[in-house]
Image (spheres, rainbow, N blue to C red):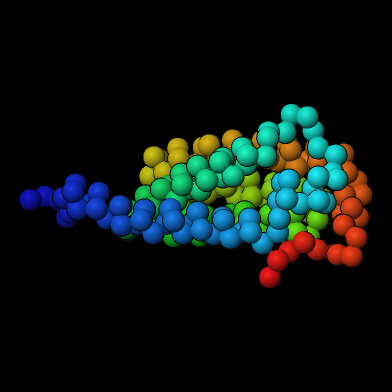
Length: 184
């Protein structure tokens, strides 16, 4: 036998990683979204001027759920690539962009920092692009799983920029009696 592990063993190893990474990333995304009310549940957000080309509210949780699943699968592929050159850098970049991703919802919907959120999403996009290239050096399929995420981040960056442009005083639209909508 010339292989270190059989194809079946490799599939099970990937599955074990996926059983951890996919639910973990979905849970973190869900928890980030629960920190502050978003969409129609947020009176501050409703008061903002938003572009007519913005998708309906239901599209955001659906899109993010699919994207988090794809991200979890991509991460599982990289974690399963034991001994691969560049694996550590790829995982580090992924963790950093995910951390910023999870911070975006509280910054925008909770703290009402529209301009900072627009800058933050550009940083997330830049790190996600770097992550995708780092993943491609380890496993091409993992990089391809991140392409929908890059497309969505590009769209979300345009949306955040347009909301920021339309609402130069967006931070001051705080509902009376509150300075933040973050739930602890």
